[in-house]
Image (cartoon, rainbow, N blue to C red; front, side, top):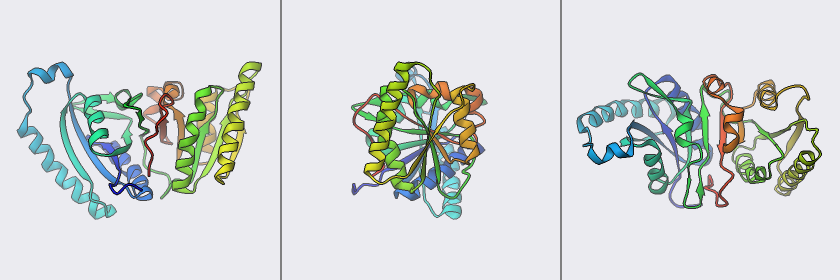
Length: 278
């Protein structure tokens, strides 16, 4: 294990929703012996950076608010979070922190509010890949269901890139000793069925190889696969749904995102080197 503790990053806008994200982050941080960083971003475009001078009074005022937040978090959860206020492009800021602050996971509320305007957080962090590193993120809109993650649902499809998600399945299962629930679509196309069978075989082989217990369910024929995934997850009171980032918009549109009973974790399939929890 690295001597430097890894960091779970939580975008913080002082709303109840960011409190929910913090609660999920605390569960993850305790399981992985990670630290937590609360980040408040004052967003503006990179072009604006050229002419803009930092508003130090505003930053100082927010830092004072953060002091109270950190004290409250410590008194309630026994964790002292790092706090940071930054101005600039959210994407640029987050990229910089990944490189300099040892961030290994982002846990965010579905919407980030600045001056009564709400931004869709996933737009800032989706497909955030660079320098051969891919960073997972979790989107939440409600507090955790349990004290720790017990049930995780993973939709399996016929895309060859799905095999890369298996690494994250193994990481999560090892961290939480949780139950892995795979759900596959009902397919009629022979080519798709063949590739799906290959993905299932690969996944089973990898999970069996490290002794991880799992179950496999087939979605109903007449329902949309995305609806079946969330219906199944709610039925078993799942704690997390894991999807590939390039499938995020299929599974989670803006309406569903704002009312997620179950947080959704996204991993990017395009990079071979993984930023692990270890």
